[in-house]
Length: 349
Image: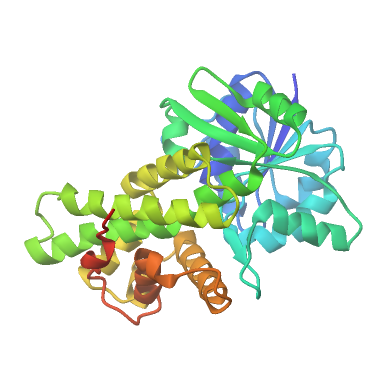
């Protein structure tokens, strides 16, 4: 039996308590300073307030003040914060984890630097920890997985990535179940870039749903031609961006495309994309979805900004990313949601 400590009681971090506990491990779920109500609900009911299924019996629920004790003796630490908690996690949690203890983060996103580089969050944390003379065993999970379907035990396949194959095998042995299937990769940049890029592109696909509601009425049937067309363009652009990251493999693209698919059909990004497509401004959409974490808005802006910097250096062609820049323009309020369809066409001659 291993000890698994999860820091961050959001939906995905909490969902990972299911396979960990069902595998017979001791699980400690630690809420951040923003998760007090969630932890109190878990203590009182044995269920996360956003889930429709009770946690497996025996999980220990902890407030942030108990984090040090909850980390003591842990064989695996899972980071369950959103991209908006990256700085907090790097400053307050990672330094408290022993150097030899593997960390598995569910946080998806990219950070752009002034020179146009796109850093994964593990790379960002490594750089910041190094400035303090610290080193941690950082790993990450990516792939098509929504928290509520993992809780429901729908068949799920993800990819764990990290530098050390032995560590990855150890983490897999702790977390894999008959419904949670885990591929392993040492290409952290590739996996993490792929699953981050899908956020902004999923929003672009969801725009078509809102646009069709605007055109045909909110009660109209779903139209899939338009969604599929934008999906294809999204995959093309993701492939080019992964190649720019030095990570343009089929496995990486497949993980990102799978994550893109599930996000379009079941993620929070779908909600904001639909509202923008229907004609809401970004401010109105944010107000409508108050309390919902919208990481896609951050990722799209950062990637577009990085490509612009690279374009100024002659290392990228903005014309190859019409969907990315359209999403960025919609989110900045500079453009209506209507898509630039002709820019998505191509010729092979």
